[in-house]
Length: 80
Image (cartoon, rainbow, N blue to C red; front, side, top):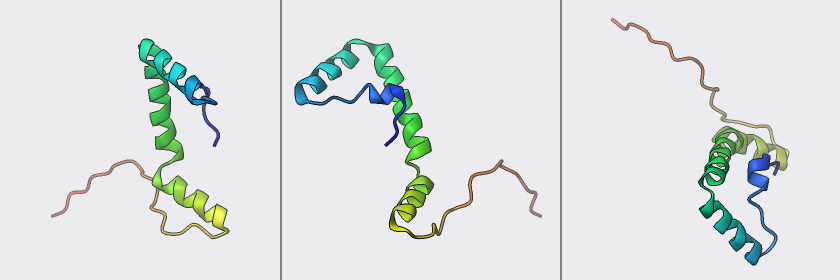
């Protein structure tokens, strides 16, 4: 996985390091909010249904299929 810096800062190599990191986020609301926003952006852009299908298809050597069209601008029509 390629993570943004705000999320790589959330990685710890051991349980004690993870505990210390968790406390640091608990004590610094701005730091926690920044990591939270980065995590939500990452999930929205990198782990959405289309991306997962594309990446799994590539990993399995298969062509992607059944991918919905990307969302476009909303239009309205008058139906009589």
